[in-house]
View (tube, rainbow, N blue to C red):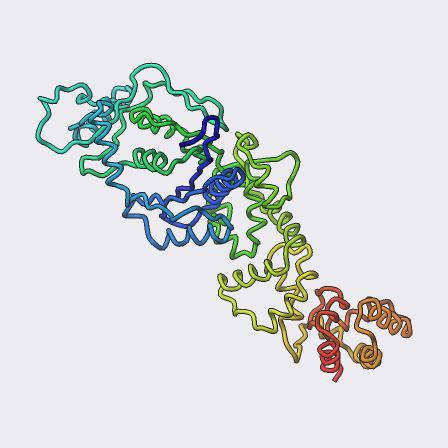
Length: 471
């Protein structure tokens, strides 16, 4: 028994439909639920709303789970299948029927459609009012029936929303919604409420396209005498042009962002800032997000997707990232894009190079590009620009430099001194000697510092590459 004055533990849920990929908007909803629950020591639950059997697929479910795992959003317990709970949903529909909060409706689909066609023709509301609401049970035919919940006919329903404020809907706008179809299958509106209640959900954080659903779902809560959760309906994500996010704006699935090479930490940071703010903070860690996140920081206006901001945050997260964690995620990136896995030598080289190649990188493709010098192996095949830097004069300078490097202590300041002295002896700037060095060590001109490369490659490999280039 809970002691008096003990706060109810926070329980949130993410409830996607497995009819496709994990949409970036759904990923943000999952993140908000995860942050709110985890930041308060609560539970974050996962429910797969797979009642649309024609469109729901195991493959789509797996894509959702994979996307959540990549984002680092762990959930408590097993993912719940809504379809598997159909008997429980039907049980509640019949309980409402028994209590008088719902009734049997024998109207056929043809009758309902005929009513709506007539209403449209006459300019009346198409809201259907079933003639069976107050019918004497003695007049009930022996025929299939749907179960409808009794909506209040007067007054208004107030949705106390933590983001939108109080939203008032006239009860004359609410129909007696069907909770159990005539074939015995439960409707989405019923299933959602029963599942949220049974799962102990305390806060329903979801897109504001569900705001009108809240008023109808409150009918079930009222009929069953259940406590209504805290509603928090968050604005949707729009494209840069301010219009609803669609394929014309680019990537929609979270997997696409992984394929583009964004690290999950940057995506979490970016998604958290899409529609939520904590002062002027743009870059923050997971620990800070968990500490700061609250419903009061969610904006009412739709957020706009801005990939330039994502690139900026990615560079910050790459620079601040843990080398081993970045290497692990880089290997996941290679796997999902179908690239060959790293060899043991490449992995070791990348780990040594990571501090220099991750700095200001805007994604894993840039890290791989910068780390080309450790990803490749002898003999180095220079590209066209690097080949031009290895002319006869440059090769002669590198030959003269080789014995000085052979005898040098392999420390950065010493190596800088040796190369600088060699350049001065030829009346050259350091950059003029660095160019052929880059070409010899990496086979290209866009590289990290030559001294960084020399330290990562080590004396033996550095000298061997220079010897290859001057042969």
